Image (cartoon, rainbow, N blue to C red; front, side, top):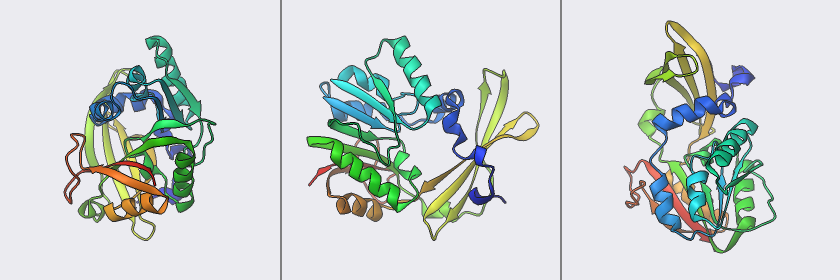
Length: 259
């Protein structure tokens, strides 16, 4: 068994340096979250900032309903891909490179979005503090901070290390089928789940390996995180249909403003 500590550094978060693979997998696995954001922001969303925007999956369609749409990410390859998509679509969205744990854009936003478990990629307290401080300094009066985080499953975290097959897909650049599996190791002391994605090409096991780590934030911890950083939680939903949050909800969708 290998964990993050003895992994090849080139494998850590390598998926976010490979926009073609990321985009291909996103088409198959990304949540149906766009209608949630569309309904939440409405048709006159004002200035919107998406943190961890990746390839622009959300920024580009949301730009059609915003006075100004900014996507922020720290992965140059993802930003290049997003800019190419924006240019091809004639989109007004623009993209900037920065670390969402500490950023200064010199402007304020009516909405700041942190979608699709991006919060969970911050595995240290200093990073979380930097994120919330940066968001607070960029929110316009009455602005909202929207966070999408999964609700952890204690039973899943307690499972022994094993590979679990996720899906098989056709890679058009190779014209071959790839089987994607996942394994994980939970560090309960640090509340961090170390995840490995295994790509098998035909009979070639582990043809490619990507690794990442995710902070586990249970419901009470996430609520406390917002409040300790000066935010009031206006709404907390359990899914993209805006159903109320409950103990069996798969998601923690937070809509908050500064106190």
